[in-house]
Image 1 (tube, rainbow, N blue to C red):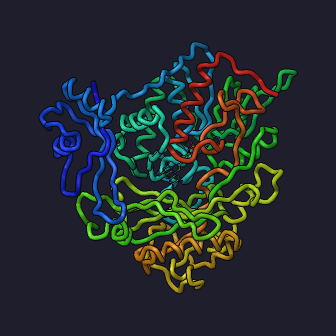
Image 2 (image 1 turned 180 degrees about the horizontal axis):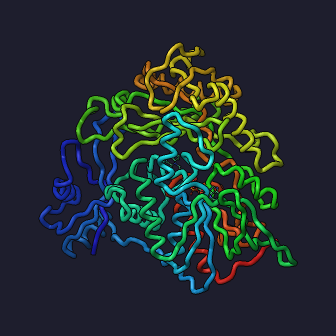
Image 3 (image 1 turned 45 degrees about the horizontal axis):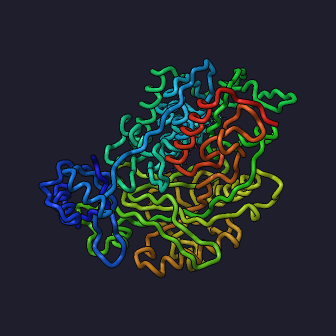
Length: 537
Ligand SMILES: Cc1cc2nc3c(=O)[nH]c(=O)nc-3n(C[C@H](O)[C@H](O)[C@H](O)COP(=O)(O)OP(=O)(O)OC[C@H]3O[C@@H](n4cnc5c(N)ncnc54)[C@H](O)[C@@H]3O)c2cc1C
């Protein structure tokens, strides 16, 4: 019998070789009686007031009389990982998955495991070509509206930071991590409490997953864009009969049995097309704000204090909240050793996001700082796409204010807090130009004020946060979808259009790589366990 034991603490300077000794001490058993020991989870505890330390959950095997004693004393519990049974699809239905981000890719993965042979459409190019075009752009070249940080093989996940954090207890989580490891992700993500893959490793992982899927009968169609739907309507309701695809300006259509729509939160043309077909959608809250960048050393100092620079400590991250104004300001997608990137899908609009490579070696740490906007604040409460219009207004103002050449609006943090326009800006990770910009040209006061109040609060609480070379860039406007594509809670089928299965972040049911992947897997499982998909009114 294997036992799971939590809270085995190793101070800095100890290694996992010492685990048996520390576990023995905590469990009050001789270390020699621990036959096997395996790390199940490892996390860094750097709460203030004590030196950082590593906290482990371990899986052990001990003699049965000791196991019984530990269970009785509640010092351990039986380790029995849950496994999801994949339903088998015995029909000859051929589902279509649109989008190769984490939701689409893991939906396809599950479909293939269940014996289905999906066709997978992706508007952008395959990842090798995508990488060439993306790098050309960030090094100063032309913007390509079909190939950027968001579109192309792997979706927004490909050059993302690849943090795989979740609080969700779902047996699919270890499965997703294992699939990533099997295709090239570092093994430590299986045990790290804050697993991270990095934007330099993700492209090849995505490519290997595609090759594996193709070997099992899936077919990928790159630079194929879903542009329209053909709909059957009868007494039973409305359902998709065909989809219209565009490739090299030619249009053609395919019959579909099921359309898994995993097009992400930035395919604004897809939302427009769904609205045209009266697909039920609703407004949902989303976040907006700025991205702050500090020298990494300042953040290490802030988080690790005197232990900063210890060889066992990774570049420090943080998770911060200010409750100083009526809208909480909180950090989002913090990237130690990372870079700020332009994350728009359209020329004429500017927004940023952050990522880091596996080694997190850049000298900067960046993080979004956002507030949550409720639907009532977007404008027209009858238009499900009002949140997108609101995002566009801000992103257009940002693009224009910074000079209209993908320069990013930026200020020194302390200048922003004191209401000054920076005369100069320090070096930054942003690959194109930074332009000192009055952020009042971008955000209305009811957004800018809580951002300023919150950041001033943090700068007051943490000396290093107020570092003179800290900058803010703007806007961070795509941290989540402002739209939900309504669907049945169990089948995941659209609540107004049969054969349509909206998934992932774009459908408003995920907010990150792992949650998008899980949503895709669940959608595939639900579909395979239902023998027929029925139209809905
Ligand atoms: C820079 C950056 C860093 C990030 N860091 C993290 C992180 O560390 N951790 C984390 O959990 N999340 C992170 N994210 C967010 C994460 O990448 C997304 O939450 C996730 O990718 C959403 O997955 P998805 O499959 O729902 O959509 P997406 O990944 O957006 O994929 C949608 C896909 O659909 C395709 N598509 C769109 N329209 C069409 C069409 N009409 N026809 C055909 N194809 C179409 C797109 O080209 C794209 O490939 C980051 C995002 C960015 C941009």
